[in-house]
Image (cartoon, rainbow, N blue to C red; front, side):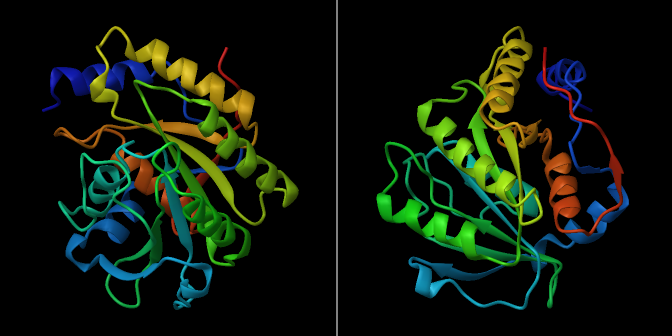
Length: 252
């Protein structure tokens, strides 16, 4: 049974459709198949420089980034169905390399890449590594950028989002797509959620018109909220799930 807060999140987000300008996954069966064997998810490699980015088996990849301490590791553990495959810390900047994780037993279904956080706790070399990966990785299918529900977008978020949007437009979305994820909605009061989500949606669309509508999540408390939607989106990006076409309309 959903907690009162989780029920409120679900009710509040019904007023915000999550359509996609491309395809949006809707196959729960496919999601269960790919992510059902949580124990099989495995750390593959870490890259601290462009030259150390591993050559893997050619599986489709998605990469996740966001400001330091946005809840990235907590969310990814929930997506993978694990408690501590990715290290979590209250201290920002824990992730300092590109970390590659296989999803599914060998040979796997896809690879999830955890990127270092950006912003005031980030380092220039981390940004250079991220940029190199995004610009050169043939296996990349989607970039996910996380935003804290309580803090919204700041100038650094907008710069990152704008850069990704420009790259997406340059390739007409054929190289990779971009999608936002709103994290830590449990940090908001019930009466704050709808307005906060709407403002973040508006900021994202104004900054990056090609960005797919954000997924609203909470991965800290149980039951998790929005985690299955993230899984479905990953499957769609990697061409592994059934999908339906929807038309994106900006929030009003």
